[in-house]
Length: 193
Image 1 (cartoon, rainbow, N blue to C red):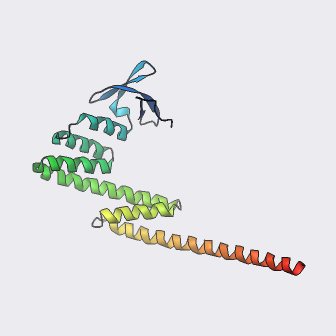
Image 2 (cartoon, rainbow, N blue to C red):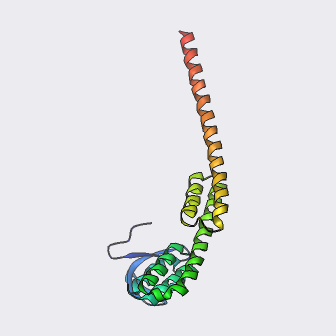
Image 3 (cartoon, rainbow, N blue to C red):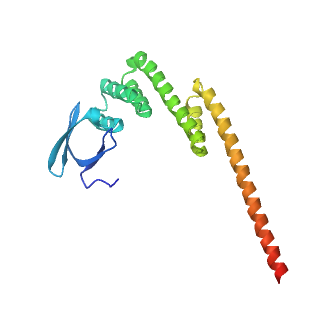
């Protein structure tokens, strides 16, 4: 992607298309963008979820607990787990009376975030991206060791560690073979002299 021109912003749509232009207006359900002098109205629902969150968050005042809850719920619905957690925590800090409403939602966020890390870890292991599999397991275990997903993450961590061990053993075997091959060529060169 190209960096936006001075004053311009990149907006990603759900389709993956990136629009570059000047934001003229942000409303609850749409954003008005100027692209090379032409005005374009884009529905918030058509934006990639993170883009919609970013624009919506600019409209919420720092001390607006209800606005923070609405943002958190948007994030939860769109599986933006870290942003959802942060917004719920901000709302709770602003209004402790929201605790009964926020705690169950934070539990759902934790479940969603843990599920995401676990799934990404499984995918990474399947694709032999072992360092990424380790990272996903470590994230899950460091934050949510008390959730049911943690046990599955421990099994995945053990499987990933075993795969790393096998990979390292194979690399060591290849290295020894290269060293032996090199040593053999060195002996042949000496014998030829």
